[in-house]
Image (cartoon, rainbow, N blue to C red; front, side, top):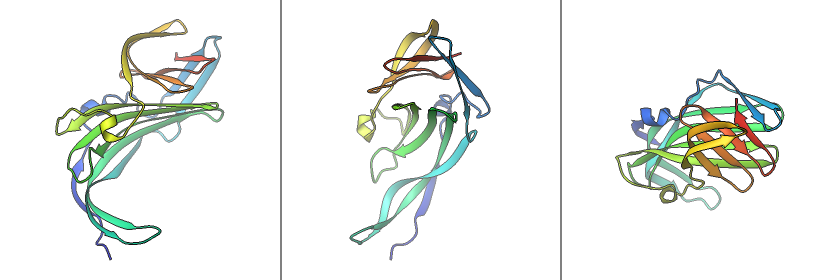
Amino acid sequence: MCPPDEKVGEIDLHKDTKSWLPYDGTETLIFSDESGNELSITAINGKEESIDMACVKKICTEPDDFDPNSTCEFYDSEAIRFTFGNLDNFLADIGCYSEVVRPESEEFYQALSVTVSYGNTIGSGRLLTKTIPEQTITLADVNQDNPFTLIPTVTLNGQTYNEVLKSEDVNLTIYYSKSQGLVGFETDTETWNLK
């Protein structure tokens, strides 16, 4: 029988990581398309704050052919999330979290994660915001995909946004800025921008 999980520390989101979340959870975001149609979304559950478990060392694994039970030493890991949506066809999951860089280590990375689902399309982007201790890693180093690329400007339906993160998925491109959050998205046939 394995002993219970054991908390050995805490990791809070760094202020630089939190600065990528310009929301408080009470806002309504309004997007418009090239024809002037509007899409209004709100944070369904407001600002969601949680404490996750970042496992830094496995203590024990019970052998079981179907569902092995493991316990570990862990850090309480702060996470913040906003889920914006409407009752029709749009959902955006935006948040920041901490995770272990590699198993059996007390090295952490913090990241911004943005996933957008619109109609039958879905896209996502991630940005590493901080490493603890400081080190150089990429999303590939931590088995994450869909990195954001920083672009100086983007114009969506005549509206220009500066210093924007861009992530291109198969059917959906996401645009996100540090100061405004989600500023737009594009499908193969539509472009939407934050009003």
